[in-house]
Length: 292
Image (cartoon, rainbow, N blue to C red):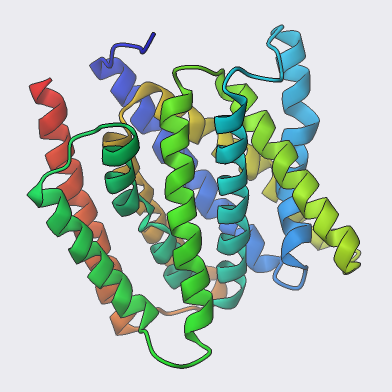
């Protein structure tokens, strides 16, 4: 039975989403530092701590690792893995602000997917928001017939897939324990990355500093999964997804300070449009929640 959404539940969900956004920002910094390593090697170590720690917690709490809605958990896991691979690729090849901003289009796609699959209401205001946000993305992607657009298109594809993963999370809150969902993601991502590495034979032995960053990447990756799953368990998708936009601000500051990456005027303009439309979507969603 679905939990009744109270103000305390929503506040906790928002807190978890903000925490997850902070973890995301830190994680992508480590990915940027590790750009000399293959993407699949980074993905594997990103999932390593999940694979190592979560099964023991499940066993201690006497929770079955198999879950209830296995097809949907596997679907969510594969979507999240694809989203992580595309995100890490764009973070390595694009300016950090651009990569993160494209990824933060996911709440816009979540609007429509939530209407289709979760039967959440959508109105003309939200349709306008979608097109405004997408126009903001065009300022960042700058479509044209050149090779530079390829990483951006990969990022956009990953964004759509990530939105599907978030929708699956919202539905799984009714059937499965959060740690079971996290455990599935860890093993699906870890095994996929390991298989590709073995096939490509491109494993790079990391140096001491890289090992430290891989360790921190694994810890923050675990934090991202736990906080995001908790956020969608306790609060509506339309409410908490807005706080994903904070990552644009965090990573822009990080990119300037640590990587000397100064976003172009078009990128800043596009990011501003996406953040503003996200804010209006949040306000509309909050009013709808208050009417219930």
